[in-house]
Image (tube, rainbow over all chains, first blue to last red):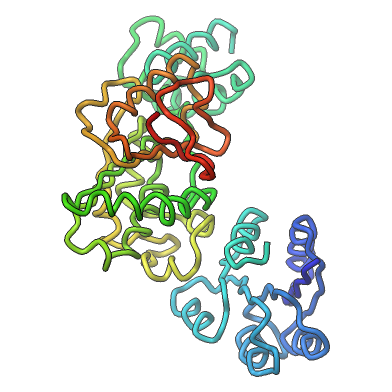
Length: 121
Length: 269
């Protein structure tokens, strides 16, 4: 079973994402900010990360850059999932090492389509 | 709505488009035709039915038919057919057409344009291979409303996220407020035409590849058969037909045969 780390400061969004991902038969783990997520990744790399952008302590982009600099940090497939929906944000995320990008609001169909495209499904 | 009204509306749709409103879809009449009634300043479906019975105004009949068509689609829908198009169908076709350097593709249920544009994107990615080629993509649909959207090439955030990888979005779309507009070079690869599948195909010309996915399921068996037979007539022996995932030619026509190992792809028998 593949493990997905859900990183979002909103408990509600984490819950929704968790429900969708578990229906797609993923194992899930949660972090409320980039720092927490980084700590988890240092112990064990997940297969994929569903990543919010705007979060306290450490935001999604900072986390992504730190993750990619870790040994083995290039392995997890990172999918941004954020309300930031302009081209410049998307480009910055992709050039910083994100594999896919979901613009909120999302639904299970979008999650499934994107996870399918990046080969997690 | 009375059973007589259900019959009346279903009959109009069937006669004008071939689409069958099955009894278990009758509930759709209510939700889809109420906006039509309102548009023509009629209070409810009874008034709409009365208007049809008294004078059958063409504009109303057309709107009723259009409202009952299904436009559900998304970019690279089901992905498999597009992979098979790029990897299995195109290479031999390009070889066979090396002399004429021309290729014609028909999306027979183009709806709001996602399917023809997905094909355009695939062909654009092969631009270096297709230099000097004349590639035509014709998108037809019975719904003018869907075709207008297709021609505009403007999609909501929700629509572009169903099926389009983010890199493709960045490459071939520009942002317009909350929407995404397909780039001009992709848009101009497709010619859209209003077309009823029950009408004659001869005016459309010949096609090397036909995408006719998820539309024949709404037709009666006999209409299905004659549409497939007529598609076959517009196709050279090395042409290919793509049907939807739940569709087949088996038991419908013997003009096409399944291409071995390519699910959903058929060639003239």
